[in-house]
Amino acid sequence: MALPAATLRTGARMPLLGLGTGPGSVGTWQTSTEPIYEAVKVAIDTGYRHIDNAESYAEEQAVGRALREKVGSVVERKDIFITSKLWNTRHHPDDVLPACQRSLTDLGLDYLDLYLMHFPVAWTRGDVYYPKDENGRAILATPDVHFMDTWKAMEKLVDAGLVKAIGVSNFNISQMEEVLTNGRIKPAVNQVESHPYLVCSKLLKCAADNNVVITAFSPLGRPGEESLHGVSPLKDPKVISIAEKHKKTPAQVCLRWQVQRGVVVVPKSTTPARILENSQIFDFELSTEDMETISGLNKDARIVKFGMCDDHPQWPFNGEF
Ligand SMILES: NC(=O)C1=CN([C@@H]2O[C@H](COP(=O)(O)OP(=O)(O)OC[C@H]3O[C@@H](n4cnc5c(N)ncnc54)[C@H](OP(=O)(O)O)[C@@H]3O)[C@@H](O)[C@H]2O)C=CC1
Ligand SMILES: O=C1CO[C@H](CO)[C@@H](O)[C@@H]1O
Image (cartoon, rainbow, N blue to C red; front, top):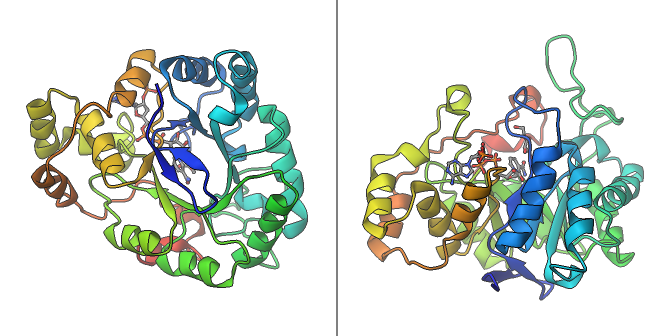
C-alpha cells in the first residue's frame, strides 16, 4: 500500500500518515518502551511508512530495535520516512551535531529524513530533559541561545548528509517567518498541535504560501488524558455525526480532515486495532460542507502549552498560529 504523501521543498515525499511515538502529557509517562517497540513493528506491517520520533521521548532505542527488524526485509530504508527532533536542552550550537548523532545511533540509521527543532525555546544544557527549579519552572539556557543560532547548526547537518531536510516545531507564524527570511536553508516542515479545536488556519495559509508542510501533532486531541487538558474533539457531536454518515470513527474523521487539507498527521497508538483504524483514512472523502463544519469547531484550545517556560521571550504560544 503506497500511502499518499506531501512533497517537501527538497523534493522528498513525506507520507501524510505517520506513527507518533511521544509519551503524552508530562507525568503520565510509562517506564517501559516495549509498547512502542511493538507498535512500530505493527505499524510497518500495517503499511505505515513514516515514524515520528524525538530524543526527548527516550524511545528512540526501542524504535531502532523495531526498525532493525523491519528495514531490509519488510521495507527498504529509502521507502520509510524517519523524523527526529532536537530537544530544548540541545540548542547550543556545539550540542546540535552530537544530539543528531545520538538519535541516529539510537535509531540505528545513517541519515534522518527530517530533523526538527522541537521548540523555539532553549533550556539549560545537559542530559536532564526537563530541568526545573524549586518552583517547577524550566531552567532556561544562560546565556540564551536564539533559535536562529541553533538553526545555523542544523543547516550544517544537511551539508554533512546526516539529515535530508530540516524543519521546526511549535513555531508560531512570526517565528516561522523569521527562519524563512534568515535561514540559508528554509524550513521544510513546521510540526504543531492541531485538531478540530485548534485549526491553525492562518498558519496553514502562511505555510502554503511559503512551501512549508504542516504536520499536526496530537491530531486526536490526546483522548484518555481529557481530565488533564479538557480537549475532546472525538466526543464532539458534529464530529460524531459526520463519522456516522461516512461509517467511520471520530478518530478517522479527525485524521481525514487534516490530510484532506494537506496536513500530515502523526497519531500515536500502541493498540494494534487503533494503529489499523488510524490508517484507514484514504478510502473515503469528506464533503466541502463536512470540511467547513469541522474547521468551524475551532476554539483555539491547546493541550501542549509548556507553561513552565512562558516567561521566555521566544515562548511561542502568545503568538499567532
Ligand atoms: N512536536 C511536539 O511538540 C509534539 C509532538 N507530538 C507527536 O505527535 C504524536 C501524537 O500526539 P499525541 O500527543 O500522542 O496525541 P494523539 O492525539 O495522537 O493521541 C494519542 C492517544 O490517543 C489514543 N488513540 C490513538 N488512536 C485512537 C483511536 N483511533 N481512537 C481513540 N483513541 C485513540 C492513544 O491510545 P492507545 O495508545 O491506547 O491506542 C493515545 O493515548 C506524538 O506521539 C508525537 O510523536 C506530540 C506532542 C507534542
Ligand atoms: O513532543 C512532545 C513535547 O512535549 C510533550 C509533553 O507534553 C511530549 O509528551 C510530546 O510528545
